[in-house]
Image 1 (cartoon, rainbow, N blue to C red):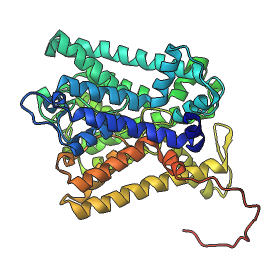
Image 2: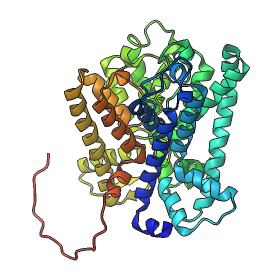
Image 3: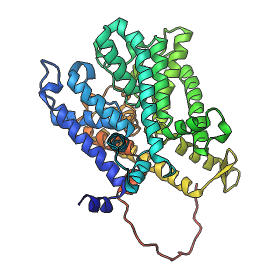
Image 4: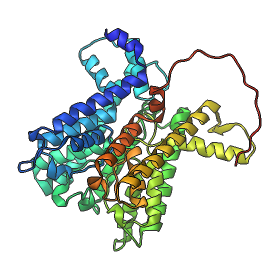
Length: 448
């Protein structure tokens, strides 16, 4: 029966179903009376489901403050879903197989390859072992560093717990926080001028969002950049370009708005953080609603781009954005070939990049039209929320708790689609058809 089911379902469908199962289990656990703090009524199903989707899809959009509403049990459920959603269900299943010393078959290896967006089937098990070890290493290091700042403020037990929670949330690019004790929905604003906390969170976000393929390349080749695969070179160059340009623009746009009253050093720190967090972490050290229109639009663009393939991040991904830009530049040079780092990119990848962008763009536009028709929010607020959901970011201009039932459904669909990715989402509904050996006649059309 199980084998027959495997043969009927594609790898992409199995990945999607695994996320749905995790979401459903989490939603029922969050409905339990023990999941909320004393004095709070049990959570209704739509809000429990919304939180479960947000956690499993490592987004961070919340209808309740995580610290003030959820009990330790509820927060633990959220944290487990963040970890599973960040790594992917098949990563954890492979860990279970390895612990049980069971052989991992070809079907499972292919499924693992698809779930981690790996390029080759060879060495997939070894790569997954390194992913698990690397994740544990980064999250433990982050927790240790954060505990030096949290423990003096919160006490030993609460400080260690908060350090571990935020380290996992940051590495998985989830954006959930339990700092509501310093103000409802305050996120990292209380520690906004603490460089140790801010830089640690930034490093964890970048480490998680840069992609497991890049870390595997680093493990094999260390600092010999010339030996890196083309994928890693594109990811690293694009990531650092976006971080630098983003930080510079945020400093220019927000020095007299959201960063007004700060010293130059604080402005630089917040500019760097604001450049990192939309890629797709969702922590905030300043109120996004206090940002200028230019800053909000820049945040929208960064949320759409997101992180890198095979990572804990969402968005169209850095590689997709780079391929689209290179394709546009090639047209200006009347050159049909797209080359970077002395390598040519196949035209199939260009078409795939265009399909990903169109899918995300249509999803954002459609959801924005629906929510604007249902709820009484401004276009800026709804567009920001839609970009945040589809990019699995978690930043908001404050409208999430006030969304109607129908709007929450729309945002949940965006979060789910953003987490599993446009390619997976499109291929879920793809049907295998026999190739038709027929070439239709071509005819010229006008573009642009």
